[in-house]
Image 1 (cartoon, one colour):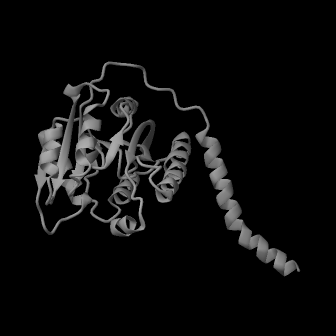
Image 2 (spheres, one colour):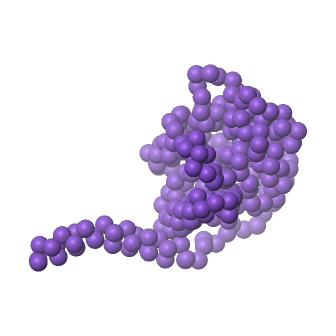
Image 3 (cartoon, rainbow, N blue to C red):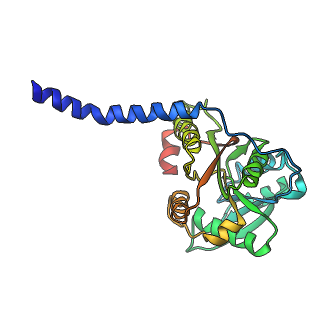
Length: 263
């Protein structure tokens, strides 16, 4: 009987530890937010980069969302990186009001290579103080750049917006994704921010100063390029700040077939 009790206790330990961890994160996430920076006239310039591979169905809505940001138009550029596209992504992005940078390379494919291309061009042009990465199927909150600007003025060099689901009511899959995102992206990130820890990168809604990109060059080309670059930032002693009032909403697949295709 003692052996059985001990076995049950050992089996329950990981569950209890995980529950305690989630409870701690939830408590920390409810603490009052850090005081915002003093209001000032915007001065930082942003390149809003949208890597897009055959995204004709979504790109116009994403560009229009970025153009509607509550931030001076003279201090931001919306740039769609049409990456190895075979559809009308480039044309539709330009018609929606974005600048379009076309990249064609049959061997170096994937989002990581598209970002490396775009970051390199931004640094060479020297126009922006920071770059923002937004996926091509995403809508953003109007306050996105205001939130980033305030954090950068406070000393941040790498930022992550809150990442939510754009279409939570499409199916049970998207509703489940919305719950998972709320726990992992919102609760966990808020708690880590309160503790002064890096919240990590999510791939969508990332922001980096150009100074940081020069100091820690981007060379992340794996399937999880955001995690890869986040680890490099950690090795370099750079914390990713969480900007919880900045929101990006990505579209999630709603069917089993689409989910398998995306994976």
